[in-house]
Image (cartoon, rainbow, N blue to C red):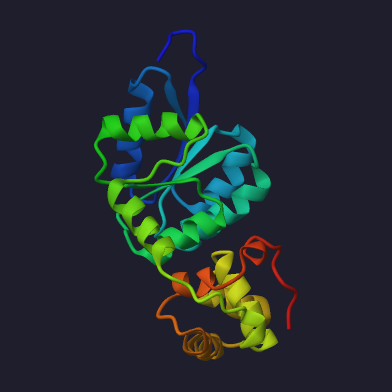
Length: 223
């Protein structure tokens, strides 16, 4: 990186102290990078990051209390110019999809070598969407799954359509239940009916049945 290039200001949201400190040291030691906010939790991040306004956020997923995915969703409104990259050990395709739906623009695994991680941050800052190779393959595989063009409105009830739209926005089952003021078991029952009606086996396949123009709509009102 040119010595005249602006320093990329990176925040780290990670509950494990050793990993958080390691990332901060890596960023502060690398030319053109600095760690402006090592946060221990999503709750702390939502308090600190709007004040320091980082360029990039490296976000863990599984943390005590609020998940990294929900934190990304809230930061998207608080810091629309900030780019977020998930940094996690989790390769589950549903978590990948939820993260991207919540507003993350990158998804890297913690086993990524330090030099590759710095390259990914540069790519993200330049407008790219970096993903670890394993993650990228899962995303490509999900979108290559054939769809039958089923319109949810032709087979799903209004409540099921609302739940599917909320799932498309990356909400967890518990969050869907809270939004609609129904029990978690009721959400699971509706999701089972959605899967059966659309002839799919998981959230990603179900959301891909939803017309693209409905995937990024604001949260539906309570039903």
